[in-house]
Amino acid sequence: MSEPEVIMEALHVCKSYPASDGRWLRANEDVSLQLVKGKTLGLVGESGCGKSTFMRFLVALDQPDSGKILYRGQDITALRGETLRQTRRHIQMVFQDPGASFNPKMKVRDIVCEPLLNFGLITPKEKAAVCRSLLEMVELPGDFADRYPHSMSGGQRQRVAIARALALQPEILILDEATAALDVSVQKNIIELIVKLQRERGLTIGFICHDIALVQSVAHQVAVMYLGRVVEVLPGENLRSEARHPYTRALIDAVLDLDTDPRKPVTVIDSEPPSPLDIPAGCPFRDRCGQCFEKCAREKPEMRWLSKEHGVACHLVSEEG
Ligand code: ADP
Ligand code: MG
Image (cartoon, helix red, strand yellow):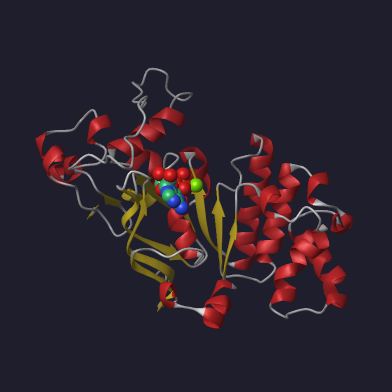
């Protein structure tokens, strides 16, 4: 098997936002992650843990305070002007609510062709034919070209958003809670479409989602975030059997094991995470962890690699080996 080709890499990314009382909110702390060509990286964690903050750096919509975002070896946080614009072509994003990001007065034809016109890649005359093939790609009928965003369902709008994002034939597609607002059956169809498009085009995907079961079903590699830090990284297919961090285990037990083995004790975290303004010293998860011991209050656990693909930031795991 050939070595995985890392096409995008975040190195020690940090970001804080000023809070109203003069304190700083740490939204990302020392985040290092990799996107491998043709594969999906899933990013999971409770609301507010810093997922969207991080993904905005990958599409250069925002910049970290420190750290690097490398795309094919080049630090995109340093890019400006036309070079930045050209790089953005290769990294596109789909948001949770495309209804909110579409101009309600634009027809689907104009929505999906806009990026191509902006980059001068097609002429207005070519719009009809290009739109037809983009709609076909996302399995929508050709006559949707004449529709407005409000006359489509959530699932159809999300297909249009995917068509628009893929119009420029990007190498990387970032989906931020892109299926979160949809019914379960529609969600399933969109996921199937994304997987199919990935297979056909060798797309590299960043898939952000608060639902660990869904992430596990699509992601080759899963990164679990807690209060701005990555606490565990591991292959999606081994998530259930090999996850070691007590936070990952709690997320898994809460959603995956309930209907499979009713005799198994379930460790569900019923508490709220601490405020990101008040992250405890030592391990950020220790207040909610049933297994914490003295060292956890003292020292912040560093990421320890159990294998090339599996890293855990937890003192328990480090002590057990
Ligand atoms: P997630 O996507 O995981 O729900 P976010 O990345 O959106 O989390 O947010 C992480 C933390 O940073 C949250 O506490 C959020 O309130 C805060 N945050 C995000 N963006 C800003 C901003 N522009 N200004 C101030 N705080 C922000
Ligand atoms: Mg978010």
